Amino acid sequence: MADQGSGGNVIAAICNIFFPGLGQLVQGRILAALVFAIIVFGGYALWFLVIPPIIGAIFHLWAIIDAARFRTYR
Image (cartoon, rainbow, N blue to C red; front, side, top):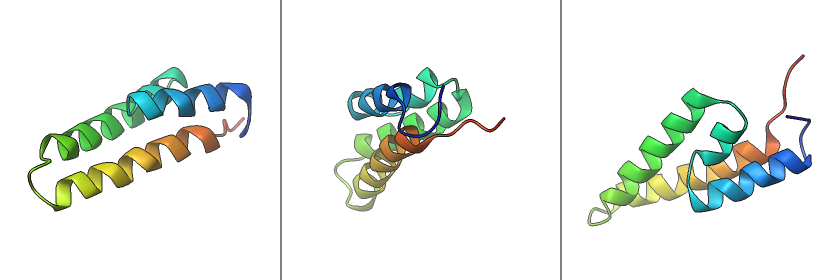
């Protein structure tokens, strides 16, 4: 992947909109993808409680922003 704001990061951020963690997986960050997916889907699965869906929504937004701002360090 290229630097922040590149086309690859935009595609990764768009992937995260539809499936949390998919953008990180596209970027090759498997652990981050798993963490985001588990927290977001776990939070959304507990929709009948108040706090978990809010946490899930925050992490969903964080996953999108994280994929868009990712920078490789050389």
